Image: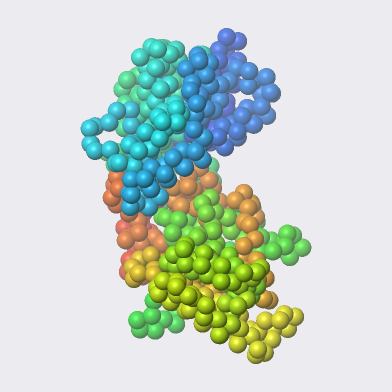
Length: 613
């Protein structure tokens, strides 16, 4: 492999080393070359290579085999911190029973429920990881649900992966356990290492095993789970005397993208390793910043701003749509690797996904789809029941608005048979001794179903037995029913907005209610390359795309301070998002509400208008 001078220094150095690898700097190629150099230097040498994800480990394994042949793996211990720790403890017969990741989630959910902790899943997991990733605790109060979780593990005589890491690190550090049986250790993405992983790594360095850590402090974006970032890198250098080698050459982005990203991250001066970023592809790209508004907005009318921004992007995305003879069918496919849309949160990506579905453009998400949300699924199931009279959709809808399980059981006993057909009749009133509030929920839904059934007597859609008017009315009425019983607040507003967006998409589809629902329920491949990638700013790290758009670049969205995130952390996050782009970068925000990072990057915003669909 041909290397530039900085990469060559890293690959051919044998002492402790910190390789500060900027975005697109070819660090994986450098690591692969270094492993080969070490193994060829002495047949007795053996390398430990640590990655942060199993996907990265698999990619590195494939590249090693391709470069050096399959026998290379006999002298390389390659895997994640967790994988290598499990193997090492098992090798020395110190490993107990491990709870699987799904079991860990089950224990955590049970612990939250058992302690009546009112917290959303994302916040609970952040608190959980912050606690579990600490090598020692400062004496502050431990949340009750974490204490309950630990007790459940103890009661079931299992440990989780966090315990495995801590046991392995502390035992290697205090001498109960030897280090890995390697002569050299390489750690990738070191900026993401937490306190336990730092102790794990230093247990090798203290036994004179040369350690090379590779990472970028500017891309340290997991402070909430105790990632050490810049501090961890400097501590490593101070404790080992490691040589610092910056890898500043960027082979990904054109200078029009890298230069503003560089200007932005330099505002973190004093809290980063200084490095000069050089765009090896030179000029030829572009960065565009737009303040997007609705062209036909009336006074007081509100629009989903991220949805507007996504609609603004649609014509640009259409440029990458594959020719008709290359389309695989279904939604429109785009050239692989061409497009990604990034946002600060998964919640914002819901609006992005809904708009792309509306325009029939393929998309993929690492997290759950917009259509997978509980209340969206309840809505879709109710619409199916509107047409088929099946039980489950009506049951889910009644439960969603607060009908008791006892009342639902009573209703089903009163309507035996395969369907809920009697419930669709105006004269059905067999509510008996069902509680008043529950009966009110049932009558309200029954009235909607009766109205839909009457409307079905009007004009028909060609090729179906369902009238257009009835379909659209059912779509709107089902959404109204599900939201009317919710208490006023952010959750109700979110549900109403999402159901409205889902309804708009369904009304643009053809055919019966069932066929429309089925069209949006078709599974989306998370690994479908011929689609627009939808990622949070956290989940996009390590990826690259020809065109990248950042939506929701508003000052009240990013920076998102609090919960352990600082201005420095948020600036790094925006920098990571910007540097995913190879050729063209879009940054979109609401007028007069742009994030300060746009100005810090030396960029100027331009107005843009959209006619909402």
